[in-house]
Amino acid sequence: MEKTDKQTDSIEGSPEQSEDLPEMKEFKGKTLLVELTGGAILGGMSIVFAFLVNPYMPTVPLMGIKIIDFIAIPMILAYIVFGIRGGLLATTLGSVFILLLPEYLPWVGMLAKFSATIPMIIVPWLFFKTNKFTSKSRIINLIEESSENLLKYYPFLMTLAVLIRLLLMFTLNLFAFVPLYSGITLSVDPRMALILAAGYALWNIVQGTIDAYLPYLIAYPTRLAKTYSTW
Image 1 (cartoon, helix red, strand yellow):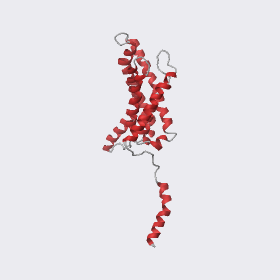
Image 2 (image 1 turned 90 degrees about the vertical axis):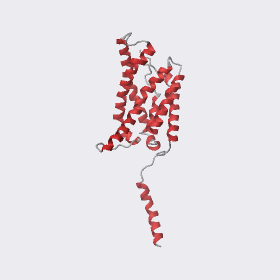
Image 3 (image 1 turned 180 degrees about the vertical axis):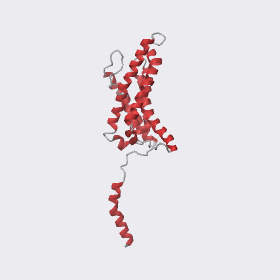
Image 4 (image 1 turned 90 degrees about the horizontal axis):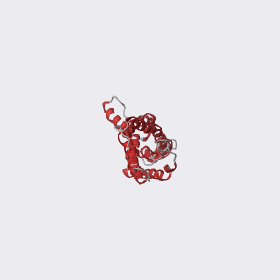
């Protein structure tokens, strides 16, 4: 009878215990396959945007770039939901397929898109990795690498990522992309080369903010990241 009473008590107490359990993510702790599958799907979505949406977007006067470019949105969403591996796969796939676009020097566009997008993924990832290393000294508290903690530090990390993107793209535009597209180099026309490189780089502040916060609005207010993220 005593054993039966204990079983009854445990059964009656189970609803209270279940209420105290933390909310579990759908794919939390699953294998690499989920991350790569999610990254591949969102990389494919980038390709759809590149072929079906971007061609109809207006361009910035005198610059020839789209006012809003949606290609990177699924790439950064892949990082938010599926972590660094999903984000890198989506970015690689979405960038490589730019080669198929009917544009002038599409391989330059591919490199430019990859270069502009990768800081938005690598900077938050490096933040968590650096914190993990420095926290061993017990001077800084450990911040677990997770989608929830990315949300906590999102404004700071994305501001830092956009600034790094700005500096990176200014350098690449000045020494690579502007000379390849226009033939204008520092040796030919230094003033115009600097103006063009600065103009394209500054536009990355606008595009970088869009790239950061459209995925944010898709992932967090909708609870997409809370439900399906793998990290």
